Image (cartoon, rainbow, N blue to C red):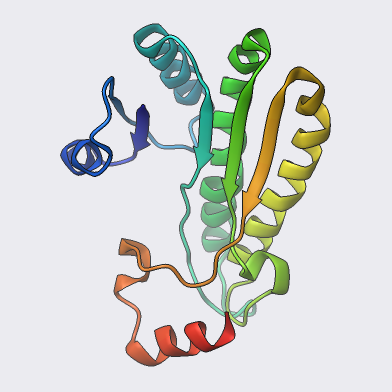
Length: 174
């Protein structure tokens, strides 16, 4: 298993969580297209195959649209959409050569329904759904499946700092 995280310190936690052998860890910013190609190439060299690709990197920069900065919009789109594209694009040639593979995009219920104060996040997660649908059509004939998971509120580091009333409201909406 290969894990990519922007923080080099995340390796120990990732290794403990998956307890996979063989295991490869890469510190990388998913927005960096060239680095994505390097990571996938090195993962292939170390592990031999790419059987599964889970696109789970994501950030939020919540703010109502009339107060959202261009930087907040761009950052969310770059991590959530461009990051997913970068790693998918880098892994597809190996999967096509193998004649198999599975790609899973982790989207969000908010990409399907929208959410107040999350126009950038909802747009990014909706884009993942569209990208996955297109890739499924492109890659299915090569034996590669593409799916999307669109969960509601999930307890993660990203959601840990939210006020209790926000978490409860999200639970009731799911």
